[in-house]
Image 1: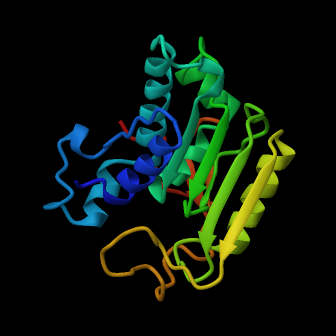
Image 2 (image 1 turned 135 degrees about the vertical axis):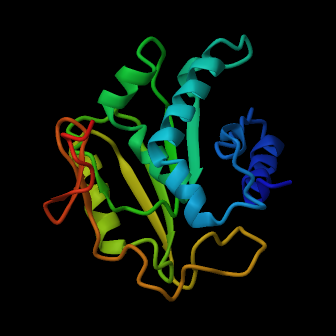
Image 3 (image 1 turned 30 degrees about the vertical axis):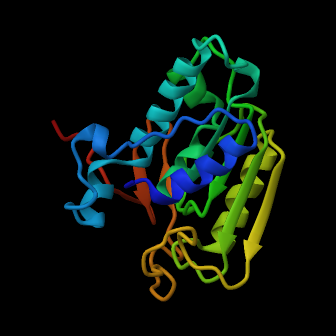
Length: 209
């Protein structure tokens, strides 16, 4: 199964009586993760695509007669962890899933913390974050700042840091992202129109046709 670690966690949740929906946001967009290099994958599918998929799943689950709409949570890994936090922003929730209850809980497994979308109000749902101290994709200082922002915006946030864990610790493949300086010290700030900037430099030309 391509969704290796996700399915491992899904099986654990299923064994405890939860209903689990796992989203493959790459294959649904025609990307074979066995053939496409990772950098190309993440430049073709963004965290905003992933959060859109999450809200689509939320709406679908609300239509299921066996699901309590007040008890649907969202959990993501790495890129999915970023989307899990984005889903806490009340603006995104009202834009993408306005007529259903918000996610009741969010769990972020080692989602990098380089985005600042200017969240001023969350849905109020709590967040649990789990990170590794040897994961170079997670700037722990930046993550602490992001978690503080989310607390200030209305959510309870709990965090757990594993001292010797790198990135994707549930992955059975070779450990990665534990030595490079990937994304450390980087912050992408989004303006009110949704355009991203790094160090005051626009990443997208607003005037481009």
